[in-house]
Image (cartoon, rainbow, N blue to C red; front, side, top):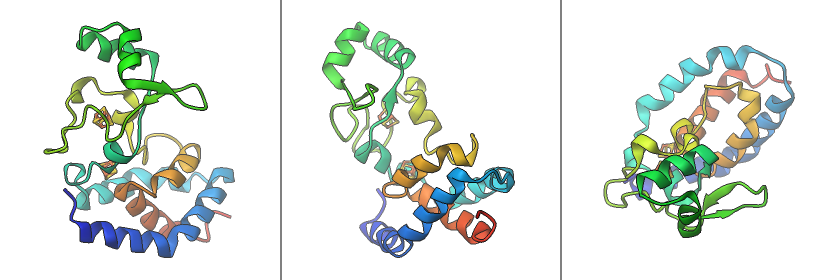
Length: 170
Ligand code: SF4
Ligand code: SF4
């Protein structure tokens, strides 16, 4: 587990810089600058040098993935259920009609080890999370705005990007 003091430090950092990061992300959403996309993979590598998801698991504890039709088919088959049975047991529809978890932490999280019990067949959303550099940054800016509240890796990425690009993204 991440130590409580680390969470406290992150929270303090977020409280100081939340407005700055949110403002930057709003500008990034409207910007056609390619500079962030060009350097994001490199910055992401730096982020993961300091962060261990198995010491965190905050996303699996505090958020829910979106389950696609294919995810539901694959995971329900793994448990010998029909998609309808799987949905009835674990999922509900959100305001966008997306299928999401009914409960938190996620039912597939091992709370002792922070490991995912269905890692090989987990939802595609989980596999890509926290989407730091695989797609155009501007397409995920609105998602990062939510994720800085929960994900230390996203927060660290924002710290690095804003330090580098404040003034470039107008
Ligand atoms: S399916 Fe696995 S990776 Fe996805 S939220 Fe649940 S425990 Fe986490
Ligand atoms: S993706 Fe973010 S929130 Fe999820 S375990 Fe890793 S650092 Fe924690």
